[in-house]
Length: 445
Ligand code: GUN
Ligand code: FE
Image (tube, rainbow, N blue to C red; front, side, top):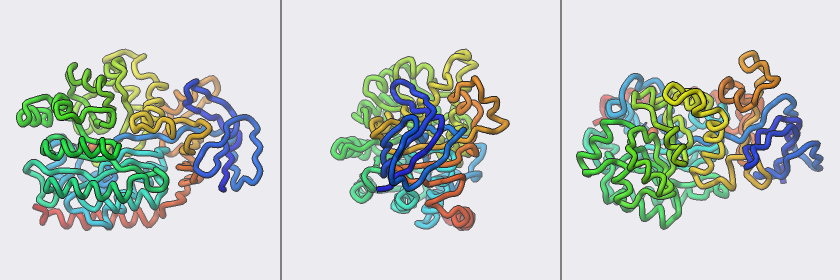
């Protein structure tokens, strides 16, 4: 049995009582075994002196594309449909097994360095096993799945799938990876968005997600051009259509939800659909501002995601939290989206979105040990006296303040040193891989 004892930290638990205490946290294997003052434990393998540090639940991001991390900086200043057609789809089509592996590791490394410990991830059409391998090797926690695209022109031939092959490949991946390492990795079906999917595919995904009890992760109502395409083709608004075909249920996670009308918000509420708010991506792609305060008023589950690296261009949850907190204040006033609410969306709210609130999202005895240790003893976060620590985290902290990250009881970064990923190899291979993909671009049809 392995035991880690974190001593003398300020611990922000996010438990149902919002407990914040100064004390110790004991990890046994993958689980939080005790939280309290002056914990004594025998046979501890490692003691981390966290005096003056803050321990928080690891962030949970509910919309990410690890396959796109290599494309950071390759698709700036475009709106969604051009961004996809001109840059992101051709680059995804150019991926090979190796480039995808390093794209995923680059993203996972960035996430670990910025305190994220679990993601909902949409991969590209091919080579998804490489991303799962990177998740397996790095010790990261994720729900992931291959992107499904069996409809639409203006998509490179390499990404155009036959409906049945897309479903078969998804099921094969699910059978190989779902519940890997005791559930550290889960499969999620990932139809890209309605624009890219036939009704036959979506209906099959609905049935398979019920059969295997896995999540469905898709983009919805991000962009006005997208919803116009859906309405022209399917004769209904996007979320009304998803409900019409029976996909709108508690297993569905919708990224963006910028352009919803009241009827669609009601459907999301009634069916228990989860919304992933991606403010950084929504701003950079000029998509719009999702009406999150209104969704929260309706008691819709909203969590946060940074989306892919080429539309943000960072995977840093501190950046996303700050945007989520400040974005709505001009329209709704300064008390909209308080720091505590946003921090909740970034932690236990994400856990609720993935149905894992009894496993992750807060620091409580019996839960998985997924956490980050922050050092805010810096000019940019001082004074520390008489300041709410959650205000410091949401409004002042940045990724460089994360000192140590633990996932499933395993130290994946300690004092900024990566423990499961060779940083210099990943940086070097990332540069090599993007050069190779860009050379291939002219031949992509
Ligand atoms: N809609 C369909 N595909 C994508 C994607 O890869 N990223 C974003 N942000 N929106 C999408
Ligand atoms: Fe996305």
